[in-house]
Image 1 (spheres, each protein chain N blue to C red):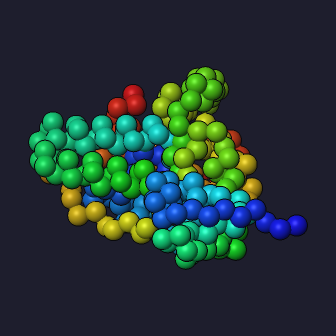
Image 2: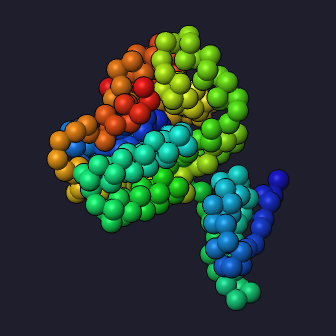
Image 3: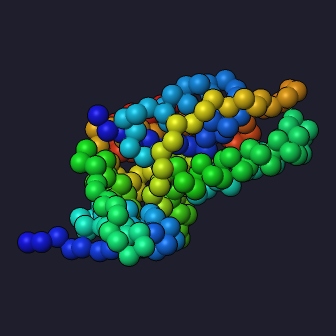
Length: 94
Length: 150
């Protein structure tokens, strides 16, 4: 059976890239066209992670991450004395 | 190896303000095995509350607070799988708080994390991270997680 195909313009893609990527993860052959000419094809990476993200996205209320950049070490410290940031959260819950 | 990790807000705060165990929290989220970082939308409010309190107490400047908020907001919205606080979660959290003897907000985090269980069956490890001992114990008791970091 031939996979469903869908073509998006760059403008359509940029409006909601996450939705287009999810279409590709669902098995749709997604092509992005540039000035009316097919230019780029979105192909899922086959390491199983896409399936996990797809499953997460299917759970009601879950907004799946679009990127996974490495976080840099924070540079800012709270000055003076008092509770740490983590302690403030735990205090606020009391 | 593929992992999902759920972060309690007290862990997230350490990713944006340098303090004890910040490096450990950073290593957890930057682990290449992590497929997605999960947290509740409640975390957004809780962490913003810390920035607000820190500004109010003069422990960071208003400008620093605004910069922190912007950086955190960007990361939260694009790089976490964030879980909406829905009515059914709230009612479930109420019951969990009583059953597990934990606070309401703790229960809400626990309910949010366990709601990811259907996806967790596709990964090798599902890790719950909190620096609150009571919440960590309650998380362990659910049996839903491969590991609980405390």
